[in-house]
Length: 98
Image (cartoon, rainbow, N blue to C red; front, side, top):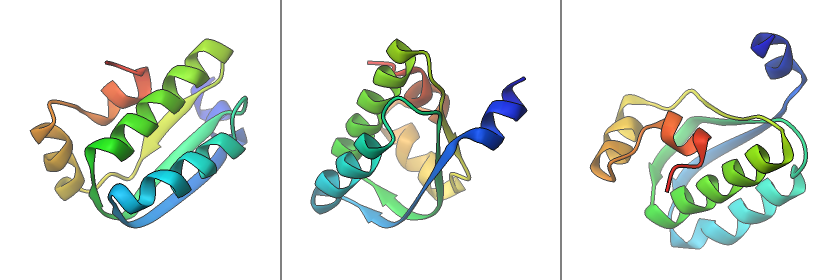
């Protein structure tokens, strides 16, 4: 069932450095898809800062409360290391962990 939902999800493909300057555009991009199943594609992301991670967590919480899916795909090993430094995994973000 999850694979079917993923095919129907809105894909939000991000790229570059997700730092302080990217928070506003990231929030706007995620808000556009509120109430829909979302797949966040991080394949082309080179860096992710804590405020962008918090923005993603907030979007995941909103998705969870509205009964929609928030999924993260294609996080590079480099991004996984950055998240690990923050004590997080992509799965933590998907679940809206505090």
